Structures are given as structure tokens and as C-alpha cells.
Image (tube, rainbow, N blue to C red):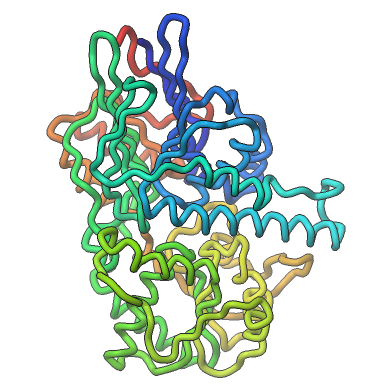
Length: 465
């Protein structure tokens, strides 16, 4: 058996994760896709979502998902639409999250296409979504959930996969794969997105000690972002924003980041470290995600029950309620998605809040190149949205330490657990400086064959297995 791997995404960027594993035997080829994400950020990246994949979806026998974030799962409806009919394997919590996230992704695409057609600003006539909510329903019918630490044989026993805790979001996993050839067995590890150690909400990433081939993410491969006292930093930022007399608008990912933020706000309010102002969560997805935590108590540290509720918390459900918040003056906190300000309800809040000098925008976590959040972080004085050039007069703050990604020190802590370096290591899911920095560090530590793969590159992992 010969084994090949092709990098269809998350190579020299932090989005569009897709890795095609091909097992070739005489007269037979079997393929598995690890992750199936949408490209986000720069337009040149997003355009890849419309390009034909260098594979035949009908020939792919299975998809293995590390977690439900759209940059790891959001291409699934297009894959199924184009002919994929295999099984989609993921953890139980990820299966629940998928139905929320993919339906939301399709709904946003449908709404954006309709709005573009109404306003006539699309280059395509008519503008069409990449996929629809009906396409998502076809995906959900193919999902098979697998428990953590429960090895599962697929491809007739040629491949065995095991999901282990990654600590990134609810249900996230790193994937260990055993490839069984006629003569030898080889062990592959896909880190997925690794979470942080000592996270008060999620468990630590699982310890892995051996791999023949490793794919490791490198989002923060070139810097440390850990805050020694996140509660104090958040309290100071909130108080400074409210002292300006306006609204604090927090851009937070609906999955993971919003729940962690509510945990900290609940704790700070109970301790009297921030004033008792109303907190509006304007993200229906974030609310649905919070409701999943009691269904999966073993997948987090918070136990049972409604773990995020507190006095003064308001859950904004209807679009009309969301729009009414734009007229809100005085002291308040609004938490909305998306975390990189690329879509969702946060956009219309930005449209109204950016010009207001007394308001504050807080960006929490990583802002990918090409996103509106990255441009605001870079200090752009005006941002175009809905066809308008909106002046940025509000205060823009950034807290990186609340990211759900392991930073450089934590990545190295996880990598140091290997008893011996893998034969080959591929540094993925990082912008070039971060990926190259982590790769250079591993080479300095005498790890053999550390590579930063190119987009669409194909490598031979094993011959004559």
C-alpha cells in the first residue's frame, strides 16, 4: 500500500482546513478527507470556495471532522452537493454543533445573496449562495458521532481512527489514525485546533506521545498570548470602556468565545468588579450553543444546568430586537458575532457604533488577514460596509489572551510530550510567519523532516506499507 496526503487548505493560511488522505493498493484507491472547511478572510482565499476541488467527491469514502468551526466544516454541504455520499465522523458534541453552524452558514449565504441581488452590488447576476439550508440537511443525514477514546475501524479495517480531547471548543478533537498495510502499521496524528491549558471552561488537550506523521496547527506558532490574570485584564477593559459613557460592543465567536466570555462576566459581576450594566447577547447561534453544554457535561468543566445565566443578562432572539439595540445609549455591553466582524449581526452594530466616540469595540482573539476585524485592529480610519464608507471614531481595543487557540508556549508544551519526534511533521493552519517560526523551532530541537506545506501540495507518506 502507498499512502499520500494532499493539502487542500490551511496551508500558509489559517482557514479552509482540508487534508486528503489517499490509500493506494493495486487496482484500488481509497480516500478520506480530514476536515472540510470553508476559506475565509481575504477575497483571494474566499474565491477558492468556488473552485473545483482536485478530487471526485463521490470517490471519497469518509470525512473525519476535528471540530465544527466553519473553517473546518463549512464546505461539507458543497461536497455533498457535488456527490459525496460517505459517512462524516465526528464527536457527539460536534455532531450537535454541526446542525447549528452549518444551517446558520447556509442562512447567512442565502441572505447575503438576496441582499446583493436587491442592491445590485454583486458581480454575479444573480448572486447565488454556495449552498442552501436544504443542502445542509443532506449533510446531517450522513453524520455518525463517535465517542472520545473509542477506536473506530473504517475503510474495511484499513484505517482506524480515534478522537481525543483537543480543548479548543465544545466537542473539538485531535485525531489519531492507524493505517494498516499488508506489511506494516503506521500512526498519523492530526492536531486539529489545539486549545489552551487550564481553561476554566474546557478540558486540556489530550497527551499524545507517538506519531510517525504529525500535522500540527500553528495559529500562534510565533507568539505567546497567554494572560497571567485574564479576569483582571477583562475587568479593566470593561471598566475603561464604560467610563467613556457609552456602549461596549464585543465581537466574539458564537462558539466557544462567547461562552467563555459569559463565564468571566458572570464571575466579575458577582464579585462586583464591574458595574451591573445590562449585558445583551445578540447571537442566536451563541445561545443555541450555550444550550448544548448541559447535554454534554463530560465535554467541559462546568457541570450540569444553565451555567451561563446571571442577573442582567438579556438574550436577543429576534432581528427586530437586534436592530433596536442600535438606538441604545448609555452604559451597556453587547456581545455579538462573528468574532472577526466578517458577517452576522455584529456588522450592523458596527455600522452604527463605529462612528460614536463614546462607544468601544472590543476584539477578542485572533483576527485573520483580510477580515474586517484585522483591518480595524490595524487602525483603518474608515471601513466600507453595506455600500457605505463608515468612519471609525469609536475606541478599538484588542485582547488576544482569550483566544481558544494554544499559543506558542502551549503548542511546544503539547509537542514536548512526544517520546520521540515523528518521522515527518507538517506545520499547518498558520499564516506564513507563524508556521515558519514554529517549524524553525522544531528543527532547532532536532526534529527530523519538518515541513510547511504549500496549498494543493501532495506528499508521499509511505510506500510499500
